[in-house]
Image (cartoon, rainbow, N blue to C red; front, side):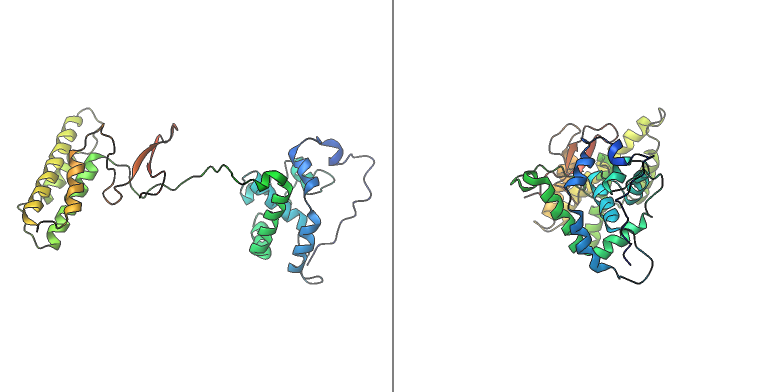
Length: 283
């Protein structure tokens, strides 16, 4: 049920209103006067029953909270919490006096979005474009995007060499090829030696284990080349050989066997200096 409109004609002589206390140059103060709030009231009125149920929160309040949420890039919980602390937020919702209490529960924003649906969200977007004027009708715009990284773990040469061994053994089993050695127990022992490589006593042992794993990977690749039919799994074997041949400072390195086109992108951020993905789709 729609809430009854408040009487805003009479103000208190003892307490000045928000409109008299706030700066007329504040962006939210200016924006509040540009938006056609009556448009939302007339359009969303159909989603409420007139004389049934508990009175709902005012439509302007819910629309104002949605706009503030996107303007300030906040969550539902944050915009409701900050509304009780920010006088400009309350003036944006046509409050006459400052109220140090939340306007509603955060979950009511979810219910309101479901109530108005996609059509209502598009109406709010259209009004924001109208308010922006010429800025909303530009042919070109600058977009700052955050792209999801490729689904790979942080690559190390030793990890790639182990994956090569695993894939070579899988190819041999699929083609019913008998390998000279499966290296099952050897790899388990080398894996133990690679642990705690940062400890001074374990560094040399870990580096020797890394070189041994690379040697095993090279043996298996060469053995498959000899035993497989010419041209079969040629692309996979070429990829394996390229990984085994690359060095630390090489350019165009391969960081993943299942995503060989992945690149190392420098972000320049202290907490995460590099990420692995693509700046544009691979051809």
